[in-house]
Amino acid sequence: MQADILEKDIHFPFLEGGGEMGELTRAFDWTNAPVGSPQFWPQSLRTTVSTVLHSGSPMVLLWGDDLIQFYNDAYRPSLGIKGKHPAALGQKAKDCWPEIWTIIKPMIDRVLGGGGATWSEDQLLPIMRNGQMEDVYWTFSHNPVLNEEGKIRGVLVICNETTEKVLHFKRLYESKQELSFAVDASELGTWDINPYTQEFLGNNRLKQWFGLGDNENIAMEWAIKVVAPQDRQRVLNSIHQSLTFGSGGLYDIEYTIINPHTQEERIVRALGKAIFDDTNIAKRFSGIIQDITEKKAIEDRLKSFSEEMEKLVQERTFQLENKNKELERSNSSLEEFTHIASHDLKEPMRKIHFFSDRLKSLMSDRMTEDENIMFSRIENANNRMMALIDDLLLYSRFSQRPLQMEAVDLNEKIRKVLEDLEVEVHNKKAIVNIHPLPVVVGYPVQLQQLFQNLIGNALKYHQQDLPPVVDISFSVVSGKQLGYPLQPREYYLIEVTDNGIGFDQVHSERIFQMFQRLHGNAEYRGTGVGLAIARKVTDNHHGRIVAQSEPGKGSKFILYLPV
Image (cartoon, rainbow, N blue to C red; front, side):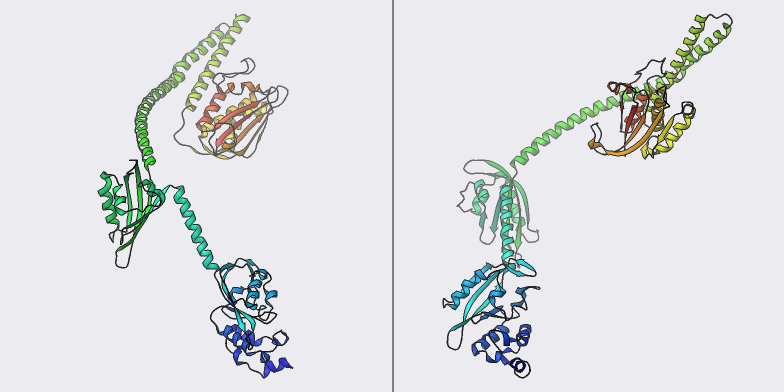
């Protein structure tokens, strides 16, 4: 019945207005609250609630024995978006603030006990709001509220959240500390001049450089006096320029200062800026000074070193030019050798072959067995010499890189190699497994010859009781992970594996040298140039070739070609 009268028939002027919280306070069902219906509230409570609701300052009223809460719109944001609002209205303070009750309860008790108002500034009171505990700073006071009998019946809390202000000052302090640390770590001097009063402020490091104690002041005359005489006018001119409006106020100059007591000279670089007022008069001039004495000494040493290096480079350039000339002569000699080898050396061999063949025909009817063997040896030696000349020509040609690389499909090159070796593959019933291979950037003719030599060797050095099996595959590896002297980049790792006779691993480097053969000519024909050509080709491609083998267990040739 009491609630019905409150809602429909009774109006309370002291609750009119007061914004959103005024509406919530009017709509609240106070009949079941410890303070009862507003029609029974004492005048002191009515007056204080009205004051709170209409105040522009954040306020909270705690009333009665249960400290029931009333608050206004100005206080509302401090409760958070998803926090204690609106449940805090009409709630007991103890139930609303369990997280800080042990802190604020003694202050409230002091006020209720007649101990007078309390004042706290920028106090940390972590509260639950927005679904989590937050560190919140407050400046607040607890004030007694008297009833009609003059007894303290409530506590009026006037509070402002100062979290942003406190955090701002903390950030400023931390920034100042970081700046101070940076200045100290960088061993910088700092200065600040008031152009109006000529007051000169500096840190302790600057005072030390100027020959002053930490507690002594820096006079403008003293600051000018410590500048070396040869630099003094230049420094004054630069200061005057910086303090002139329109110059931008920038100050950047190097000069020498001399400690008047120790006569220690120090080369410094001063950096600063002038700030101007509304009348275009400089009102502040500040900056830093860095000791660059050691830096200048290093620069001088580097300059001297640079001059020495330049002289050395000139000498090396002269030597290199001479080497290039020698190389040109060597290349010319190589070309001359190629011409001789292809014409002058081959021609006598062709004549030996022609005349020995004629002589053999003329003597065929009366030739003894020993004579027949001698002619066979001449023919074999002649053939070996011709093969050797051909291989030398091939090696000399591959010793020189073509002018330009191009994209080379290794699958296509190996197909051409197998076409050239088709008869030998067929006769030996060889099996060649080719996994998909990459397209590399290189010299087509050289790469084809490389695989020609490797596959040809696998067919040549096969085990007599087994058909040759050759397997060719690839992967991508990093040069940094390999133990070979390769650049830190990616490489195609191409493996050519066979099931041939193999060789002892101790010969893994020897086989790539010119004319080095592990078997006699009677067993396996060859000149010992093929693998030397293979290494020359990989060198020309900035790659590498290595071999792994074991007698009777085949061989593996591993190629590294840049991706």
